[in-house]
Length: 453
Image (cartoon, rainbow, N blue to C red; front, side):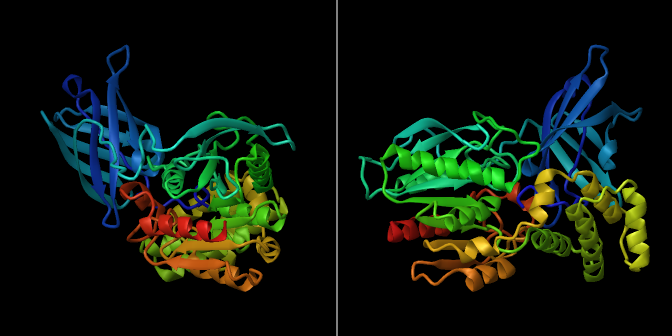
C-alpha cells in the first residue's frame, strides 16, 4: 500500500550539482514536473584527496543520501550524474545561484538551485509543550516477544473515567515510527493531538524494528502486525483507565483494524484507506491508476497490468523466476503487449524485490473479516486515492459490513491516500503538499468516536 507501490515512474527521482571550493554545502531547488514541484537538495563536499563529492536528497519522496558523481567542467560548469537513475544535471554557477538543465531519459527540464537546505512547511504538526498529558509506555506481543514502545496521549483535564474512549493507532505498510512519519508529515501525531482536545485518548506506537520497538521484521507479514495491534489493545484495556477501546488504522493498518473487529477485540474500528479487497487486486488497481494519472496511454496501462498480473501469479505460487528479464519478454511477446523497455524493467524489479510480506499480501482477502465486524465501523477513503482506490474499496465495505446504524462509509472528494487535498493523488505529491490531513477528516473522526463511545 503506502510503501508498496511497485511502479517506478520517470520523474520520481531527480538530481543536480555544484561547483568547487566556493560552493560546498547544501543547495536546494524545485523541479517543476507540471503535476507537482519536487524539492531537491544536493550536499557537496570534498574527500581527503580534494575530489568533489555529492549526495542528493529528494525530501518530498522521503529519499535521502542518494550517491551522485560531481565535477567542474573545463567550461566552469558544474556537472552532476546519478548513473543508477540515468540522471544528469549541468549548470552555470554564480555566487548565489546554479542555473542549468536536468535530464533523465527523454525528459529535459530547467532546474535552478540556491544555497541552503529548504525545510518543508508543516503547519499542522504540533510542537511541545502540549496542552494535554502524555505518557511513554511499552507492551509486549506474547506471540513472539516483540516489545513495542509508544505514546499514550490523554485528553485535556483527564481523569480515570469509563466515559473516555481510547484509540489504538496502526500504521500502514512499511516500517514507520509512532507518528507514521513520512515526507516530514506526522499524520498520527496530528490526529492524536486533535483527538486529545476532543476528549479522546490514543495510543500510537513504533512499528516493530523501528524507534523504541523490537521484533523480527524481515519475515513479518500483516498477521504479525495484527498481533502487535492486538497486544496494544490488551495493554490499554489492562490499564483500567478508559471506557471503550477502538482501533484506527491507516492503509494496511485499516485492514488490521478490521481483523481486530472480526475477532471481537475492539469496541469500534476506523479504516482510513484500508483495503477491503484482495491484496493482488489492490496492487493492480494502484499501478493502473499511477500510470494513467501520469499520462501514460490507456493501452499501455492495460498492457502493463496484464503483465503485472502474471508476475503476481508467479509470486503468489512461490515460483522461483530465475531469468526474470527473459520471462517478462516472453509474456510481452506471447500476449502481444505494447510495453516500453522501462516498464518491462520495472516488472523485473518487482520480481527481484519479492519479500514474505508481499507474497502473503497478494492473497490477503479482508472480506471475511469485514463480514464478521459486528462493532461500529467508520470506513473512509479519499476520492483521489491512487493507492487504495475509493470506488472499489468503499463499494466492498458497503456490500460486506453487517447492518449497524452506527456504521459510516464515506468518500472525501479530492483527498489522496494521506487524506490531503490534492491534484492528481499520486504519491509524488505527498511531500509537496503542506497540509498533513484534511481538517474535515479530523472533525469527522472525533465526532464519530464520540457518538459511539
